[in-house]
Amino acid sequence: MSVATRFAGLDRNTRVVSGVGTVLLTLTILSFLVAPALTGYLALAFAVFVGGAYLVDEENTARFLLFVTTTSTVLILAFITVYLLLNAFPVVREMGLYLLVGSDPFWNTGSNVYSLVPMVWGTLVTTIIATLVAAPLGVAGAVFISEIAPGWAREVVKPAVEMLAGIPSIVYGFIGFTLLNQFMQQELSLPTFGSLFVTGVVIGVMALPTVVSVGEDAIASVPDAMKNGAGALGATDWQTTTSVTLPAAFSGVSAAVLLGVGRAVGETMAATVILGNVTDLPDPLIDVFGNTITLTSLIASQYGAASGLQFSALFAAGVVLFVTVMGFSVGSQLIERRMQSRLGGEQ
Image 1 (cartoon, helix red, strand yellow):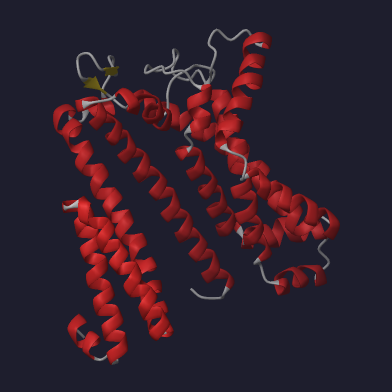
Image 2: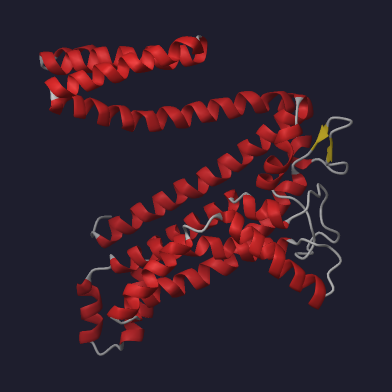
């Protein structure tokens, strides 16, 4: 069935609200791209029309607004993707594969040579360290809240963990810079004031609320019948948790870890505060206490003074980061859907 046929099958009020509202919204978006001076007037006209339509036909207007908010998510994602790719294209055309596999010099603004190898390596190392921190502690916290903690402790611990997510990342970064960095330098005699290890630990702590919250929801979604059946067979509470609950919720727990890792990959301020603006690989390469830069800290520290090909290189870093985080998000969604399918008895 074509779009025109479906539109013709709607009642008159729905056609008027959807048609006029879509035209005004489309003109507003196009004016933003072509004639920004008219955007304000068209946006005002759209708001006035929606307000008047809501007073006359509340149901159809609400349905139209829900449709707009849903489709706008897809459109915004598409616009961001296209904008990133267009701005990253000049450096890709100029540098080619050197952008992703180039060797020393990696990043030289004077000679317009750009390679993202140190940034990708720094992001990879900090993400692995953050995962080693967030995954076991987050899963343990989720198990404790869902299966072990008494009611009064659950009422205290769960809100406290969720409050951690509300702390600004700059605060985490400042604490890591003033406490952990100085400790590593003074007590372990590290030569650099800033290390991938400290950054990974701080980001791992920042990812904990995500892993705990999503993991706790996954564990709580395991049917009680499975747990009661294990208890009826003589299993202890701990045996039920380790042998029944966690395996059944494995997909959801994995999704929680992936979401936490996605936050670790995209973390900006903590990495920018702790790490120095070093665009070289650590020496030796596996030195987790070395100092280099991540994709996010590269963009945050250099975008203000960037221009020309350097500006395009920062967009290329954004594309790599965008694709990586999107991959983690899609992967977590697929794993969570598989968990729901398994627990629901579907194949």
